[in-house]
Length: 167
Image: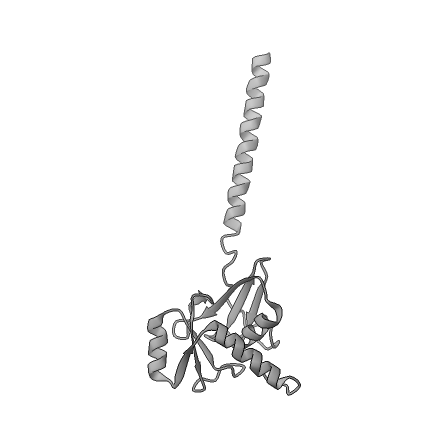
């Protein structure tokens, strides 16, 4: 009788262990998109910086916070202003001007131009590769800039325009 009880106990332990492993595996699968950008939904996405509609175009950006929140922006300038004001914890994502591919803001390359009108007029364009940036620089009157420089420029623009209603 005691041997039968041990066998039942072992089976119960094995079943519980398998159920725990299965739930861990399912939880891991459920978070496969965690920390990655979400597609833009023009029907519902509103810029966290200026409250305008975010269009599904190369100017859209987003920050995926460490808490799993998705902050979307219609212009990299809006994301820069939001960043220097709020210093969000998370990963910024930008889109390549030519391919629309999402790339991490830290890895992206940037250009500043007046030749392309961005949604909020910042004039900043992003690229996932040096090749794409070089192509842009050869086609437009533009200069390469860094993310740090964009933050400085947008901070200065915002401070100079406070109360004037523009970025």
